[in-house]
Structure formats: C-alpha cells, structure tokens
Image 1: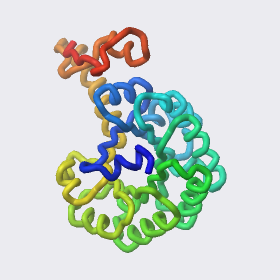
Image 2 (image 1 turned 60 degrees about the vertical axis):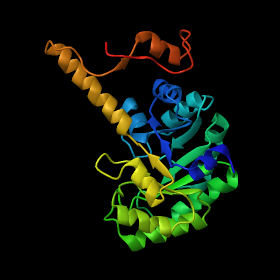
Image 3 (image 1 turned 90 degrees about the vertical axis):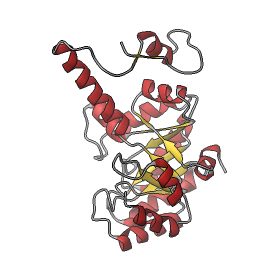
Image 4 (image 1 turned 135 degrees about the horizontal axis):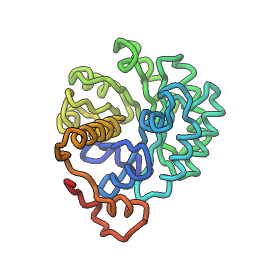
Length: 264
C-alpha cells in the first residue's frame, strides 16, 4: 500500500484540501496538510477557461509539474482524463506520475459507465501505483438515483479504482448506504450545509475533499477586501504578509511551522 493509499485507511478520514497554484498548495502543506489535491475549477478559472470541458489539459499538467516535487502527496483532478480514448488517458496518467503525482481523480460526467471503466483499467494497467479516485456524477449532475449510483460504483471498483467519489451527496443515510455497498474508500465532497467531518467519519467516509471551496472563498475574500478599501473601511480577516508569500516560493527564509497570518 502506498503512503497516499494508507491515508485512506487511517483512524480519521483524509481531509483533502484542493489548491489551484503553487502558493496555495505550499501554504496548505505549511499548515500541516500531508496531502493536497488540485481543483479543476480553480485551475480553469485562473486560465480563463471553462471547467469540465476538457479544455485545461496543458494547465493541469503544468500545475502538476510545479507541485509534484513539493513536500506533500499530490492528487490531481484530471476531469474525465481530457479524452475519450482510454490510451490517451493512460498516457496522461503516466505523465502525471512522472511529474510526482500519487493520485488522480477521474470523473464520469454521467457519460457511459463502460467508457469510464475502460479509462480506469487503462490507467491502472499503465501506472499501477497511481491512486485512481473514480468519480460518478449521479448526484452532482443527475438526480441521485440509487440504482444507477451503485451500478456505476460497482463497475468502477471492478475496473480497478482505488477509491470512489460521489460529490453532491450530503444525506447521512444515503452516505451510510453507499459505505455499506463499497469495498474501496468512499470519498465525498464537503458541504458547509452537510455533515461535519466527525459525522462523516462516523458514517464510514474515508476521504473528504474540499473541491473548489477554498478557491471560491479566496476569490470572495479578494472582492470583499477591494470593496472595503473602496468604501473606506479597514479590510477584515487574516492575510499572509508579503514575506510569508515570498517564502512559499523560496524568496526568503521562514521557519518551517508555516506562514504567519496577519490582519494587515
């Protein structure tokens, strides 16, 4: 079992924060997160491209190469693999692994389960030690049909997925039901209105992703700060200093305990 896979079998669920650039990933690592994922929305939005449209292959690879040698375990959100050709998805996986990624998230977008199975199998054949988190969008894009969800999760497990991901699922009873019917770790997307991390642990969830939440909060904080200055108010909230951000890229020396937060 790889170190990243082992995090899915620890006493507590793996809380996976998702970064969108070098600074956000290294700041999360400095804050003590052993593993960091990427957010496809953040990567796409930063480049002015649509998310979930197979438009950010180059940007995703570029970010993986910048982060792959970082002091954390890296999992990459690769949408649907940026191709419907399983062999091209497998080649992407080889490139991500060579860059230093230890995990990849592949989503079905409610497309044919058979095609997603072929992608999963191709990736596991090409890069056996890459943790494949197989995502189904039955709740994210569909109506959460239980039969279809279980059918897809079972197929993805049989294809070799190391974990399964059902974003949009927040009902505790339905989460517990899926846990009972899956043999690999179940990943859910954290929702501020959904169960707490402790409650998800009690339900048997093994991985909780933050998805685009951090990116969207950062964008919201930027807008709020700009509006505060324009309105003559002192900006609220904490922010790293200039030197703290420089330190994330090796610009200045900084103690290893992570960035110091300032309200200025």
